Length: 311
Ligand code: VAH
Image (tube, rainbow, N blue to C red; front, side, top):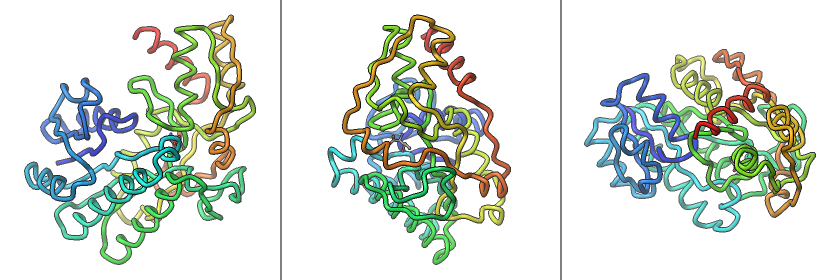
Protein backbone atom coordinates (compact mmCIF):
# COMPACT_ATOMS: atom_id res chain seq x y z
CA UNK A 1 0.00 0.00 0.00
CA UNK A 2 0.99 3.62 -0.59
CA UNK A 3 1.20 6.52 1.87
CA UNK A 4 1.28 10.12 0.64
CA UNK A 5 2.61 12.54 3.26
CA UNK A 6 1.57 16.12 2.44
CA UNK A 7 -1.46 14.94 0.43
CA UNK A 8 -3.28 18.28 0.73
CA UNK A 9 -0.49 20.24 -0.99
CA UNK A 10 -0.27 21.42 -4.60
CA UNK A 11 1.53 18.30 -5.91
CA UNK A 12 0.47 15.97 -3.10
CA UNK A 13 -3.24 16.38 -3.85
CA UNK A 14 -2.92 15.55 -7.55
CA UNK A 15 -0.55 12.67 -6.81
CA UNK A 16 -3.20 11.35 -4.42
CA UNK A 17 -5.94 11.47 -7.08
CA UNK A 18 -3.68 9.79 -9.64
CA UNK A 19 -2.45 7.05 -7.28
CA UNK A 20 -6.02 6.31 -6.15
CA UNK A 21 -6.97 5.98 -9.86
CA UNK A 22 -4.07 3.61 -10.57
CA UNK A 23 -4.06 1.48 -7.40
CA UNK A 24 -7.61 1.82 -6.06
CA UNK A 25 -8.75 3.87 -3.06
CA UNK A 26 -8.23 1.02 -0.61
CA UNK A 27 -4.50 0.92 -1.43
CA UNK A 28 -3.73 4.61 -1.04
CA UNK A 29 -3.56 6.41 2.30
CA UNK A 30 -3.48 10.21 2.08
CA UNK A 31 -2.14 12.15 5.05
CA UNK A 32 -1.35 15.70 6.05
CA UNK A 33 -0.84 17.88 9.13
CA UNK A 34 -4.40 19.22 8.79
CA UNK A 35 -7.57 18.90 6.70
CA UNK A 36 -6.20 21.42 4.19
CA UNK A 37 -7.98 20.00 1.15
CA UNK A 38 -11.44 18.62 1.92
CA UNK A 39 -11.79 17.04 -1.51
CA UNK A 40 -8.69 14.92 -0.85
CA UNK A 41 -9.86 14.20 2.71
CA UNK A 42 -13.36 13.10 1.69
CA UNK A 43 -12.56 11.14 -1.47
CA UNK A 44 -10.55 8.29 0.09
CA UNK A 45 -8.64 7.09 3.16
CA UNK A 46 -7.16 10.06 5.04
CA UNK A 47 -5.09 10.38 8.23
CA UNK A 48 -3.88 13.43 10.14
CA UNK A 49 -0.12 12.87 10.33
CA UNK A 50 2.76 15.05 11.49
CA UNK A 51 5.68 14.24 9.14
CA UNK A 52 8.11 15.38 11.87
CA UNK A 53 6.82 12.76 14.34
CA UNK A 54 8.74 9.53 13.65
CA UNK A 55 6.60 7.29 15.84
CA UNK A 56 3.38 8.67 14.31
CA UNK A 57 4.67 7.94 10.79
CA UNK A 58 5.82 4.46 11.88
CA UNK A 59 2.42 3.71 13.47
CA UNK A 60 0.68 4.75 10.23
CA UNK A 61 3.04 2.55 8.16
CA UNK A 62 2.31 -0.46 10.39
CA UNK A 63 -1.45 0.22 10.64
CA UNK A 64 -1.87 0.13 6.84
CA UNK A 65 1.07 -2.13 5.88
CA UNK A 66 2.59 0.66 3.77
CA UNK A 67 5.30 -0.33 1.29
CA UNK A 68 5.75 2.97 -0.60
CA UNK A 69 5.88 6.54 0.73
CA UNK A 70 5.61 9.71 -1.39
CA UNK A 71 6.96 12.42 0.93
CA UNK A 72 5.42 15.61 -0.44
CA UNK A 73 5.39 17.70 2.75
CA UNK A 74 7.82 20.65 2.78
CA UNK A 75 8.05 24.35 3.38
CA UNK A 76 8.73 26.04 0.02
CA UNK A 77 11.18 28.77 -0.98
CA UNK A 78 9.33 31.98 -0.09
CA UNK A 79 7.88 30.84 3.24
CA UNK A 80 11.17 29.15 4.09
CA UNK A 81 12.90 32.54 4.00
CA UNK A 82 10.46 33.82 6.62
CA UNK A 83 10.93 30.82 8.93
CA UNK A 84 14.41 29.37 8.16
CA UNK A 85 14.70 26.98 11.10
CA UNK A 86 11.11 25.72 10.73
CA UNK A 87 11.82 25.03 7.04
CA UNK A 88 15.06 23.20 7.91
CA UNK A 89 13.40 21.13 10.64
CA UNK A 90 10.29 20.17 8.63
CA UNK A 91 12.10 19.43 5.36
CA UNK A 92 14.95 17.46 6.99
CA UNK A 93 13.22 15.68 9.92
CA UNK A 94 10.55 14.29 7.59
CA UNK A 95 13.13 13.04 5.08
CA UNK A 96 15.25 11.30 7.74
CA UNK A 97 12.16 9.62 9.24
CA UNK A 98 11.15 8.17 5.86
CA UNK A 99 14.69 7.17 4.84
CA UNK A 100 15.21 5.45 8.21
CA UNK A 101 11.93 3.54 7.91
CA UNK A 102 13.23 2.27 4.54
CA UNK A 103 16.70 1.52 5.95
CA UNK A 104 15.07 -0.51 8.80
CA UNK A 105 12.98 -2.42 6.25
CA UNK A 106 9.55 -1.10 7.33
CA UNK A 107 8.93 0.23 3.80
CA UNK A 108 10.39 -0.58 0.37
CA UNK A 109 10.17 2.51 -1.84
CA UNK A 110 10.45 6.24 -1.33
CA UNK A 111 9.70 9.20 -3.59
CA UNK A 112 11.09 12.53 -2.40
CA UNK A 113 10.81 15.76 -4.46
CA UNK A 114 13.79 18.00 -5.03
CA UNK A 115 13.66 21.26 -6.95
CA UNK A 116 15.49 23.60 -9.32
CA UNK A 117 15.97 25.55 -6.08
CA UNK A 118 19.08 23.37 -5.49
CA UNK A 119 20.82 25.62 -8.04
CA UNK A 120 22.17 29.04 -7.12
CA UNK A 121 23.41 32.19 -8.86
CA UNK A 122 26.81 30.55 -9.62
CA UNK A 123 25.11 27.71 -11.53
CA UNK A 124 25.13 28.02 -15.37
CA UNK A 125 21.66 29.43 -16.08
CA UNK A 126 21.00 28.16 -19.59
CA UNK A 127 20.36 24.44 -20.09
CA UNK A 128 21.58 23.76 -16.54
CA UNK A 129 23.34 20.37 -16.54
CA UNK A 130 22.49 17.38 -14.33
CA UNK A 131 25.92 17.70 -12.68
CA UNK A 132 27.03 21.28 -12.01
CA UNK A 133 27.83 23.91 -9.40
CA UNK A 134 25.14 24.04 -6.75
CA UNK A 135 25.24 26.91 -4.23
CA UNK A 136 21.57 27.44 -3.28
CA UNK A 137 20.87 30.73 -1.53
CA UNK A 138 17.49 29.83 0.00
CA UNK A 139 16.91 27.65 3.04
CA UNK A 140 14.51 25.60 0.94
CA UNK A 141 17.20 25.11 -1.72
CA UNK A 142 19.74 24.14 0.96
CA UNK A 143 17.34 21.50 2.34
CA UNK A 144 16.79 20.12 -1.15
CA UNK A 145 20.52 20.03 -1.94
CA UNK A 146 21.46 18.27 1.33
CA UNK A 147 18.39 16.04 1.02
CA UNK A 148 19.65 14.85 -2.36
CA UNK A 149 23.02 14.01 -0.76
CA UNK A 150 21.28 11.96 1.95
CA UNK A 151 19.05 10.14 -0.56
CA UNK A 152 22.09 9.10 -2.58
CA UNK A 153 23.94 8.11 0.64
CA UNK A 154 21.05 5.92 1.89
CA UNK A 155 20.81 4.29 -1.53
CA UNK A 156 24.53 3.58 -1.82
CA UNK A 157 25.14 2.65 1.84
CA UNK A 158 21.89 0.87 2.80
CA UNK A 159 20.36 -0.07 -0.56
CA UNK A 160 17.31 2.16 0.02
CA UNK A 161 15.22 2.48 -3.15
CA UNK A 162 14.63 6.24 -2.99
CA UNK A 163 13.88 8.17 -6.19
CA UNK A 164 13.73 11.91 -6.75
CA UNK A 165 12.99 14.65 -9.30
CA UNK A 166 14.14 18.28 -9.32
CA UNK A 167 10.73 19.80 -10.11
CA UNK A 168 10.60 23.17 -11.90
CA UNK A 169 7.78 25.58 -11.14
CA UNK A 170 4.50 23.70 -11.41
CA UNK A 171 1.26 25.10 -12.77
CA UNK A 172 -2.08 23.58 -11.82
CA UNK A 173 -5.68 24.57 -11.20
CA UNK A 174 -7.03 21.92 -8.80
CA UNK A 175 -5.11 23.07 -5.72
CA UNK A 176 -3.46 26.40 -4.97
CA UNK A 177 0.32 26.33 -4.39
CA UNK A 178 1.61 27.41 -1.00
CA UNK A 179 4.52 29.75 -0.39
CA UNK A 180 6.51 29.29 -3.58
CA UNK A 181 8.30 31.78 -5.81
CA UNK A 182 6.86 30.30 -9.00
CA UNK A 183 3.31 30.67 -7.63
CA UNK A 184 2.87 33.81 -9.78
CA UNK A 185 2.35 31.48 -12.77
CA UNK A 186 -0.75 30.06 -11.05
CA UNK A 187 -2.03 33.29 -9.45
CA UNK A 188 -1.99 35.08 -12.82
CA UNK A 189 -4.66 32.78 -14.27
CA UNK A 190 -6.94 33.17 -11.26
CA UNK A 191 -6.61 36.97 -11.41
CA UNK A 192 -7.01 37.04 -15.21
CA UNK A 193 -10.44 35.45 -14.82
CA UNK A 194 -11.46 37.29 -11.65
CA UNK A 195 -10.10 40.78 -12.36
CA UNK A 196 -8.73 40.76 -15.96
CA UNK A 197 -5.53 42.22 -14.49
CA UNK A 198 -2.57 40.96 -12.45
CA UNK A 199 0.13 42.67 -10.44
CA UNK A 200 3.14 40.34 -10.82
CA UNK A 201 5.64 39.96 -7.95
CA UNK A 202 8.43 39.07 -10.41
CA UNK A 203 9.83 41.39 -13.10
CA UNK A 204 8.67 41.00 -16.70
CA UNK A 205 11.77 39.26 -18.06
CA UNK A 206 12.22 36.72 -15.25
CA UNK A 207 12.58 33.49 -17.20
CA UNK A 208 12.02 30.30 -15.17
CA UNK A 209 11.65 26.58 -15.95
CA UNK A 210 7.99 25.57 -15.63
CA UNK A 211 5.78 22.50 -16.11
CA UNK A 212 2.08 21.70 -16.14
CA UNK A 213 0.94 19.50 -13.25
CA UNK A 214 -0.14 16.64 -15.51
CA UNK A 215 3.43 16.41 -16.84
CA UNK A 216 4.87 16.52 -13.32
CA UNK A 217 2.56 13.74 -12.14
CA UNK A 218 3.34 11.64 -15.24
CA UNK A 219 7.09 12.03 -14.61
CA UNK A 220 6.68 11.03 -10.94
CA UNK A 221 4.68 7.91 -11.74
CA UNK A 222 6.98 6.95 -14.66
CA UNK A 223 10.07 7.28 -12.42
CA UNK A 224 8.49 5.22 -9.63
CA UNK A 225 7.38 2.52 -12.09
CA UNK A 226 10.76 2.30 -13.87
CA UNK A 227 12.81 -0.82 -13.07
CA UNK A 228 15.38 -0.07 -10.41
CA UNK A 229 18.50 -0.53 -12.51
CA UNK A 230 17.35 2.06 -15.05
CA UNK A 231 17.21 4.66 -12.26
CA UNK A 232 20.85 5.58 -12.50
CA UNK A 233 20.64 8.86 -10.59
CA UNK A 234 19.84 8.48 -6.91
CA UNK A 235 20.39 12.08 -5.88
CA UNK A 236 17.69 13.70 -8.02
CA UNK A 237 16.85 13.95 -11.74
CA UNK A 238 16.80 17.26 -13.60
CA UNK A 239 13.37 17.56 -15.20
CA UNK A 240 12.08 20.22 -17.58
CA UNK A 241 9.25 21.00 -19.95
CA UNK A 242 9.22 24.70 -20.94
CA UNK A 243 10.62 28.05 -19.78
CA UNK A 244 8.86 31.39 -19.94
CA UNK A 245 8.71 34.93 -18.53
CA UNK A 246 5.72 36.76 -17.00
CA UNK A 247 5.45 38.66 -20.31
CA UNK A 248 5.16 35.37 -22.23
CA UNK A 249 2.39 34.06 -20.01
CA UNK A 250 0.55 37.42 -20.13
CA UNK A 251 0.64 37.33 -23.95
CA UNK A 252 -0.67 33.75 -23.95
CA UNK A 253 -3.56 34.85 -21.71
CA UNK A 254 -4.33 37.87 -23.93
CA UNK A 255 -5.08 35.51 -26.81
CA UNK A 256 -8.07 34.32 -24.75
CA UNK A 257 -8.80 37.48 -22.75
CA UNK A 258 -7.84 40.38 -25.08
CA UNK A 259 -8.29 43.13 -22.49
CA UNK A 260 -6.14 41.40 -19.83
CA UNK A 261 -3.45 43.70 -18.41
CA UNK A 262 -0.37 42.97 -16.29
CA UNK A 263 1.73 45.25 -14.07
CA UNK A 264 5.01 44.46 -12.28
CA UNK A 265 5.88 45.01 -8.65
CA UNK A 266 8.85 42.77 -7.80
CA UNK A 267 9.12 41.82 -4.12
CA UNK A 268 11.57 39.71 -2.04
CA UNK A 269 10.85 36.75 -4.30
CA UNK A 270 12.63 38.45 -7.22
CA UNK A 271 16.01 37.75 -5.59
CA UNK A 272 15.07 34.07 -5.17
CA UNK A 273 13.96 33.78 -8.81
CA UNK A 274 17.14 35.52 -10.01
CA UNK A 275 19.24 32.84 -8.31
CA UNK A 276 17.54 30.01 -10.23
CA UNK A 277 18.23 28.70 -13.78
CA UNK A 278 16.39 29.89 -16.86
CA UNK A 279 16.31 26.45 -18.51
CA UNK A 280 17.23 22.90 -17.55
CA UNK A 281 18.96 20.04 -19.39
CA UNK A 282 16.90 16.96 -18.55
CA UNK A 283 18.47 14.62 -21.13
CA UNK A 284 19.42 12.10 -18.43
CA UNK A 285 15.75 11.60 -17.44
CA UNK A 286 14.75 11.34 -21.11
CA UNK A 287 17.49 8.76 -21.61
CA UNK A 288 17.03 6.67 -18.40
CA UNK A 289 13.22 6.42 -18.20
CA UNK A 290 11.89 7.92 -21.47
CA UNK A 291 10.68 11.19 -20.03
CA UNK A 292 8.87 13.51 -22.46
CA UNK A 293 6.64 16.46 -21.62
CA UNK A 294 3.28 17.10 -23.33
CA UNK A 295 2.15 20.60 -22.38
CA UNK A 296 3.50 23.83 -23.92
CA UNK A 297 2.47 27.32 -22.79
CA UNK A 298 -0.50 27.50 -25.18
CA UNK A 299 -1.85 24.15 -23.93
CA UNK A 300 -1.27 25.11 -20.27
CA UNK A 301 -3.06 28.44 -20.76
CA UNK A 302 -6.03 26.74 -22.42
CA UNK A 303 -6.28 24.13 -19.63
CA UNK A 304 -5.96 26.69 -16.85
CA UNK A 305 -8.47 29.21 -18.23
CA UNK A 306 -11.00 26.53 -19.24
CA UNK A 307 -10.95 24.75 -15.89
CA UNK A 308 -10.75 27.87 -13.72
CA UNK A 309 -13.68 29.42 -15.60
CA UNK A 310 -15.77 26.36 -14.73
CA UNK A 311 -14.75 26.70 -11.09
C1 VAH B 1 8.88 27.19 -5.07
N1 VAH B 1 7.21 25.95 -6.38
O1 VAH B 1 8.59 28.16 -5.73
C2 VAH B 1 8.42 25.80 -5.59
C3 VAH B 1 9.49 25.20 -6.46
C4 VAH B 1 11.11 25.60 -8.30
C5 VAH B 1 10.04 26.18 -7.49
O2 VAH B 1 10.49 24.66 -5.71
O3 VAH B 1 9.50 27.27 -4.05
